[in-house]
Length: 319
Ligand SMILES: [Zn+2]
Image 1 (cartoon, rainbow, N blue to C red):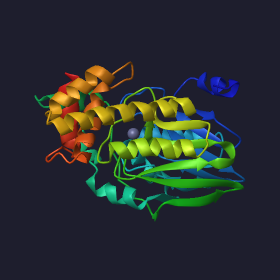
Image 2: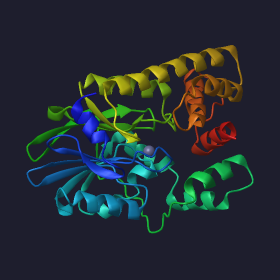
Image 3: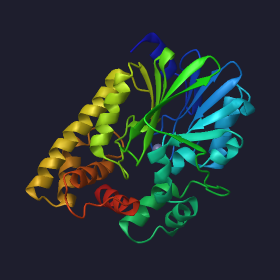
Image 4: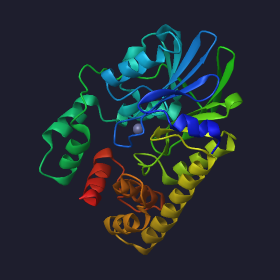
């Protein structure tokens, strides 16, 4: 880790931290559900924002901080790294900005749970483990007033956009954490905003994507040659941090695939994997979603993929 990295890590959170000449990160060190990071690139009176926040007040707090760097009206482009609400439910506050994501990411929007549905689930806090899990992690968020705001433009593979004098590369990572993940690479400054292709200090959740896709995405991010990575959640990562995530996901995929081939029931496999791979990272119950994705990729019929089935699986491991 360089002296510069150490200096960045010392700033208290949540806060807007300078990463390089044109790049900033809005960082929560908190790895709990819903506290997502955002990114900002500013040059010559133009700005690009990477992801909004989970609620309107949280996005307002982010935009107020951004105004210390640029005018809100200068944000002409908002990149959505994926369609989960914790990265997109503040989009309506960027009226006038072009909202861009990948084709597969945009297509995934119709499968996402809406704010009303999540509010209902969190408040019902039903007697089952899944209801209690959702209530514990989401009931404290206020989703009032949110209008889910879809992307206005999509791209495939790679696209380069110019922000002032800075070239920014948008990378379509395909299915991994979600049905379509996107990373933002500021190549001249060796910075990557990875969205939920990277979780820092917590286990990766695999919703409707692919565990092998998550592993491939880590490698694509490393192949950019970047030195500093802003994960979707948790503290900044350097190259060895990204390699560690890739290697841990690989070990889980290998073990889960062995269980799948031997016909071990998914619930048993997930329990064994959590016992062996939890380590010190937060939310080890998310290993259920990694195991389920590996089962689906191994061709196990009936392996769950819906959001609710994933939450039920995590809840059963958490209790
Ligand atoms: Zn997220």
